[in-house]
Every structure is written in C-alpha cells, then in structure tokens.
Length: 258
Image 1: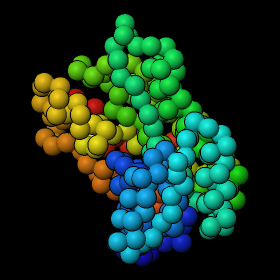
Image 2: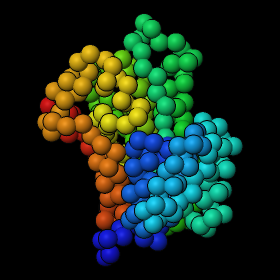
Image 3: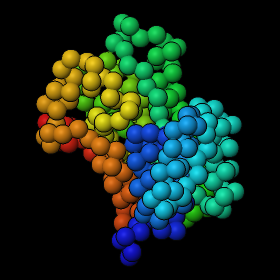
Image 4: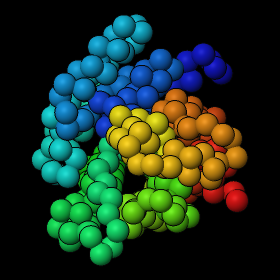
C-alpha cells in the first residue's frame, strides 16, 4: 500500500471547501492523491482554496456558488464531478450552516428551519444525488459531520437547533450505512468538538469566558484545528477503513469522554 498517497486514484467531492473543515479536507485529500471537486456558497473563498491546492501542486476544481439546500445546485455539483473525472468514490459533506440562539429567542423560520436545512437537508440531498455514482464505484465512502453537540450539551452555547441537526446527521448516517451495505458503500461520521475556524473565531474572541469554557471541557488543552479533522477523514475515506461503516469517530480532544 502506498501510504504517501493514501487516496490515489479516488475521486472525491468535498462540500464547504471554501473555509474551515471543508477547506482543510479538500487540501489534504488532494495532497493524498485524490482528484477533488469542491463546492461552496462563496465563490471567492472557493477560488482561494483552488489557488492553495494549485500552490501545493495538487490542482482541484470547485463549483461555486453552490447552494447545497437547492436540489438543482447539488445536481450540478455531481454532474460536474462526473463530467470532469468520470466517477465518484468519496463524498465529504463538510458544508453546513447553523443558527445559534436560546429556545426562547429562536425564530422558527430563520433559526430552526434554516438550521435543519443547513445541517441536515444538505447531507440528504448530496447523499441522494451522489448515491448512484457511489454504487457504481464499488467502494464508495460517505463522510458526514455530526458533532460533540450531538452527544453532550455544552453549557455556554445556545445550540438547540444545531444539536437537533447534528443528532439527525448521526442517526441518518447509520441508516445510510445499512442501506449502502449491499453496494459496498460505507458511511461514517466524525464528531468534532469546537474547531478553530473563521466561523468560530467570533465567539472565541468576543464572548467573555467562552474560550476558557471550551478548553476546560477538553482533556487535550488546545483548540481543535481543521487538519485534526482532515486526518480522521482521510482514514475513513481510505482503503484502510474498508471494514469501518456506521461508525462515529469523536475527534474532540476528549471532551465527550468526561
């Protein structure tokens, strides 16, 4: 096995490729030999990721703007991948949106429903549209993102809708693993704790005591980085995980272990 190019010969779609975990996964998958097609709602940040991939000598292509809550946009993403590379082996559903508010303050439409669409529907649409191509691959792999919040409540964070969305992803992925078993499609989740990204920088810097609360909840006393998640995703996408499906991998500094 070529362990320096663990994904060589595989074609991967990575959603949310413009920033955070999605960008980290896209760049790391490309470095491991995968042919990567990214997707992001923001064409500027998607282009930045494409440029970074080119700089590291592993060019990729992103579809942007791509609204993952719109079936036609998702179909265009899958079609682009097949037109460019002729196949699809790996689907990494990193793209998501979540609104955060306490229950008494959350608006039903802009908060609750938008979060369920942005964290749950986006995974359903991408998986459903990619499904026939993952079947044709003969060794398809789906990597979805649940969360430490799908397992434990976190006192400082008003995350009711986020907990519901990520809990749904966790349960849906187990069902996908069962439905994919006859076609050798594996489906797994990664459950990160808080990862330091552009999206999380605002509460980390502006909510008094928030960073300290996060660190107090972890056994490894540092904030998670996108590459921490990328390494786990590479494993789950690779042939090394050929007997791993329906699993949830906590990558959380130990925060759900106590």
